[in-house]
Length: 137
Image (spheres, rainbow, N blue to C red):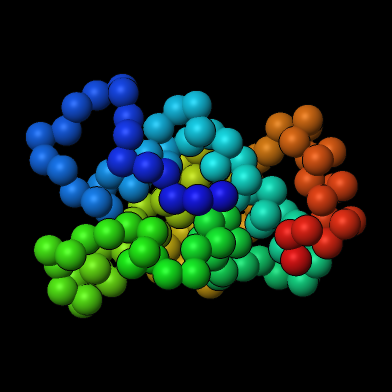
């Protein structure tokens, strides 16, 4: 899955920002729920495979499979440090969003790993098949 594009039709923003655009493009429907469900399925498969949950960074890496975030989100106006801070904020917001939707469970400052949340029965069958094939490991 790739990072959401800076295209969303639900509303207009006052400013353009590459990281904010990536966030909105990732959570904008109809793809936002699918991405959240994917995070939940990956978390569940990780627990089944490893006996513990992924860290937030491991889950983000598994959901998006991005090798170079600077290529995925171009922002030449910011310094490297500023881009890393924006990327960290984006990742924390996604984890929070998925937690609020209930597809994962994570409490910042308390949890070290992400726990599975609620996932619909239709998706669980697909997760079991994917986990057995080793796709999420």
